[in-house]
Image (tube, rainbow, N blue to C red):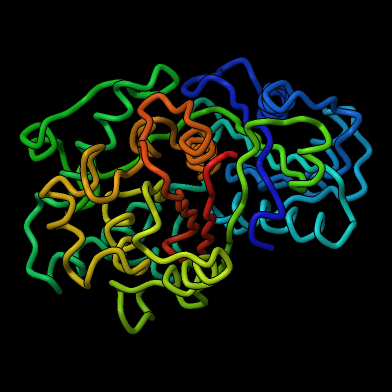
Length: 376
């Protein structure tokens, strides 16, 4: 599968607030932009794969999106793996193309939690709600607290993630939040669920994004010069709720990355840039360790010492990530990876190395990994 599939085009809407739009209309706009970027007519597309909307899941959602696009795809579906779904859908599209079931696929997502319903993020967490366990932030507060305690950490590493992502986002004209912060400002930001500060938490953003997936052979036939090869992908799923896990500082991300690196035939030193899911600042730190880029308990120090900056050992979330570009779950990270590999990113990272992208959902329940190579 290595390099046999490419991402031929990317597109998105403005990120932020869309009070007069519904999620399907935003998806249509993002898909139109992705098709234009690839130079592909919509009647050539025979696959529409949609990440289920977080706010209000609905039956036959993939078919609803396809109808709005004016398409009758061979394969049309919606998938729910939380924030891990977008890379999972890209991998499913790649497998279907390899099997001869599809020619060209759109993978897309859109939602309006900023101006629409955000109840999915605030919902009670099962029977434990009687003890006050409400909201997505509460589960990540447990992970954050345990990570700090297990490795005797201060707040500087978490702050470095927030400061770095906000710095990159401040230079991204498409970012929802274009406001840099200092470490002192991070330390002064109020607690949401202690020990999580406001600036540890990602945005809630309206918006949509889409990518065009096809075989490398098809891209050559169509003359798409900047197609980005998919070198590897992987997935892994955690079945246990947070408080039932044996170790709160390790996740299934390691198995997902191992699968992707093995498919790509790459080692860690071959990766030049990373776009890692950063719904909360603890998430990319644990992911760096699960992926094997840092030893256990060392990612916070790596971040605090500048390792994730543009001139660091592994530049991270170069368009701002979920903490600054947009809180929409995951496809924006893929798009930034594609732009880095095409050489047209807003803050380009040079060299010949590949890009690794992570998506994860729930409270680090689901995970998917994508490795992209440089456009030929």
